[in-house]
Image 1 (cartoon, one colour):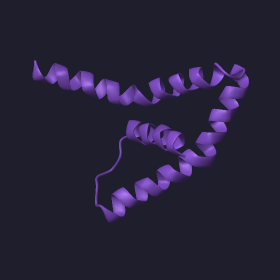
Image 2 (cartoon, rainbow, N blue to C red; image 1 turned 45 degrees about the vertical axis):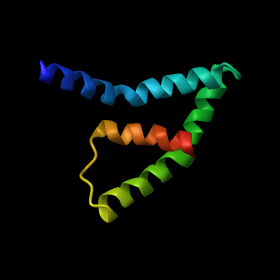
Image 3 (cartoon, rainbow, N blue to C red; image 1 turned 180 degrees about the vertical axis):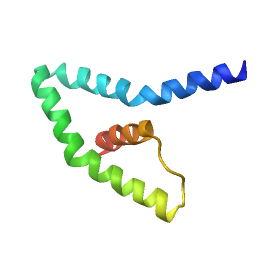
Image 4 (tube, rainbow, N blue to C red; image 1 turned 90 degrees about the vertical axis):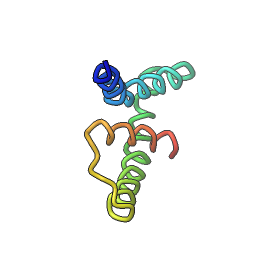
Length: 85
């Protein structure tokens, strides 16, 4: 029973970035056309998200000695840093 709970939490973690990206797209496209919203979000990801995510990764892995990130953690932090940026 305990392993089933852990598997559900892991699955949610793996797709949290996708859920967040869909919600952000819905919010932005409620005000602007969908094609503009997607372009705006892509520009924000490239302009802010990647840079801030790399800085955060560097700080956490080299200075604070945290472990490696899984593929979904990269995407989760990318969406988070895009929203913060």
